[in-house]
Length: 314
Image (cartoon, rainbow, N blue to C red; front, top):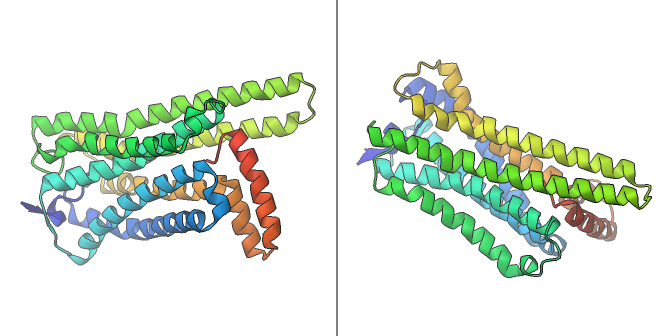
């Protein structure tokens, strides 16, 4: 058995000073992310007009998986700051770290796949069933558990260094980072091509909404590229560094940056989920401005329909 204090940090090579600085920086970021997760989830659940949009249930799934990872990382940071001892096996720590990270990554895959079904295959009755929603979400959670299961029985990056743990580092990098990013990139590219072709068909009919369609296409492309870059920069360094843990000489500043990149990526993701969900954003804006509820419901209903046609939120 080992303690969380000795084995929690997968990047900073057991440097107490670096670990403590990372924990100090990460804690407020994680707390803010937790607040956004809870706020977005509760807002969707308590407002019937938001619950009717099926894509919002995938948003809740993203929020819940992000919340699980944030709470686990907060626990690690708290023990770093306050010497809060927890007796856990190093295998359990590795399993929990990989599983919660996979949950976040594959919940985004599920979300993008759901958008693909809603936009490209909107006329397929199977994809419009509530059962398909549940199957997609459960599949994401099951894959996360399946991918993390080897860490329950094999010593990995949180245990003693070995050839097997080195091989597992490649396995983690591929299954946890690169595979989800590839899935999201392919689905987003297919959505963009479909929306672009739809815009061309609208132009061919002589519709005068060309500028609006072009602006929508440009916005969609920018968000796809931004999401891809944020995920790659946020998550790849912390796991790639495992591959060179024995030979690489990385400064403490770089280690700290790599350690906080995932937390910043999650915070950015939560903010963009709210910002790109036009009905939710409109509701928050009008709630702050104290506009009549009837206007809010009418505009949110219109935006829900537009959002569905344009490929959902985010």
